[in-house]
Amino acid sequence: MVQLDWSNLAFKARETNVIVISRYIDGAWTKPEVTSDYGIVLNAYACVFHYAASCFEGLKAFRGVDGKVRLFRPDENARRMQSSAAFLDMAAPPEQLFIDMCVQCVHENIDYLPPYGYNASLYVRPLLFGSNPQLGVHSPAESTFIVMCAPVGTYSGAAGLTPGTATIARNYDRAAPNGTGCYKLSANYAPSFHPYNVAHGQGYRELLFLDPATKTKIDEFGSSNFLAIKDNTYVTPLSGSVLPSITNKSLQQMALDFGMKVEKRVVPVEELAEFSEVNACGTAVVITPIYSIDDKPTLESTTPTLTYRFGTPDKCGAVSEKLYKRIRGIQDGVEDDTHNWCLML
Ligand code: PLP
Ligand code: COI
Image (tube, rainbow, N blue to C red; front, top):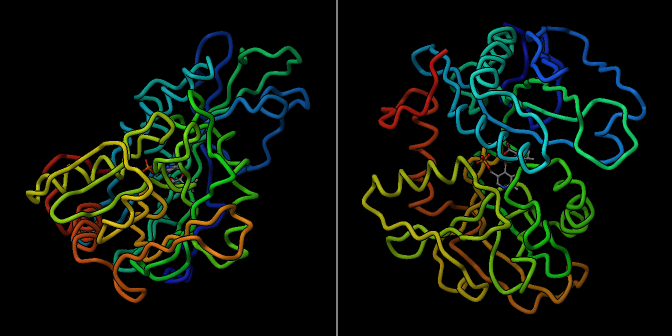
């Protein structure tokens, strides 16, 4: 095993032993190749550079308390990549190829899989992009599928479950109505750089996007879903411009297992006043408690019109903590994986 500061990995790109690559050429996927060379050579006309023909996934592998290696729900990521690629009219790797390449990537880089007990994991990043040279605006004939991985700690750098602040992005949208929000397209993320820079510059950790058509309903954070607790109910937005999060789907099942009610429905912004706990949830952020959300006329405004508060800045809500412990417990082999979510490697 490599020697890294497992308690302070942060969430950042790192080169490990190898990446795994398959190419879609002449209507078929090539046998996956393993290489330590991260320098991909592409033609300057490659479709991805000009027309953003690209989508990606994110999933995690964990070293359990029992020493076994678990990959969390790779079949779900495989299917979501197929749906993203279908939206772009691009060839997607078949489910089994996707899973096999993720497994191979973890095996080949096992030296980088963090030990149990550091709240760290191996973040696996599958990436698909149109790689043939072209000038016309149409879907690419050739694609490249790469699986890479990096050992990571928490997304924000703060200890797990440390509450953070958020602000609403009133004058920015994450995705257009009837657009790309429900697919994991690379092109959804570059437009969030600027509003995130503004929000981070003002000291906020997260940015909450509203439904782009009416700006009256909650959609999601820029890199994670929104989930709230109201009495014994788990509430999460139903919206065509939200990414179907695998973490959120898993947490909803856990909430049901705990005997809670789950509501996936339209969430008006004003309902924020009625929630006792609010969290961002996703593979990278797991569950990140949000203790306040500012609503401002524009993101650039310095004075909020309204500040919604949930719990206290120093403590995660009790229900959120219970959900967090359950999902992390399953991933670490500490709790029973009753729904068979983990692929054992
Ligand atoms: N929403 C957005 C915009 C994301 O980028 C992500 C991250 O993947 C999520 C939600 C959470 O999805 P998942 O739980 O599948 O990682
Ligand atoms: C993830 O949670 O896996 C993501 O893709 C979010 C972000 C790092 C883009």
